[in-house]
Length: 342
Ligand SMILES: *Cc1c(COP(=O)(O)O)cnc(C)c1O
Image (cartoon, rainbow, N blue to C red; front, side, top):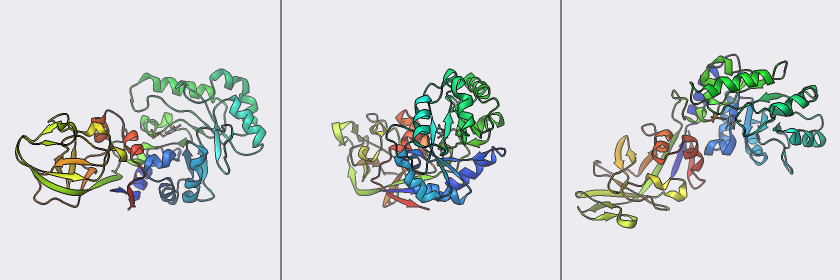
């Protein structure tokens, strides 16, 4: 099982997203082990590309990013300063008064950022909390004031303009660098860019950055290939009956590797293909814990491995079949794969 990660495609996506917001500096969001692709390697590549600011979700994600990005990088922790957090050299993005007072008591004089809630109701100071503490906090010199958009992947959604107006109003007179846009926000245009952008999924080749270069190839080794007669069944619960004589390959990966069981065929109707050099091999029968079966009848020769994710079938195509988003497909891919960086 090989997860091939194209670091030069990630770098190209970073450059392309940065070029869409020339007035702002582009950071890199590398939470959840860089969306499952390896925070240290991704951070190292993007630091070489000029990225100076990185975002993680949790304090324990900092070390890998630091190892890759080097001592000069600013590493922001989006969960802020939680009780018992070990922030080290990282910069907490403080989400409420409780975090702010805890941080100032425990890290006086050290850099911090602030997250404002502009309407998503997930993280950040509420407008009233901010109004009460704004002057005191700004006097302490936050290195970043940011908020996050709820609907940026839908350009026409009225929530975008509404959150923009709230953010502008809440940050009136703020001289600290401001940040509002993740990948979707970058694509909404310059009003949303402010001083720092925070792309994540677009770096890794996912929607809504449709111009992204593909980053991931997931190749699953073929263990065995057999002939199946018409009328025979394949896999658990006999869900698939061969309509004709066919050749079936069994590959070494399954739902224990983050390959969702909903990629199983729907009875006799395949939902997804494995690909051999772009040639489709429909998945037939159930996805098992460690095994998947595919109809390779169309192939002249069966290769050593078949691809589930590749340029012809990207993370969003797989996500659509499962009924989820590319983000979840990527982060679900576990640690069992051999990662190969190119
Ligand atoms: C995950 C996240 C991002 C990156 O979002 P993408 O949609 O992956 O570009 C940016 N900012 C915050 C606060 C996030 O949680």
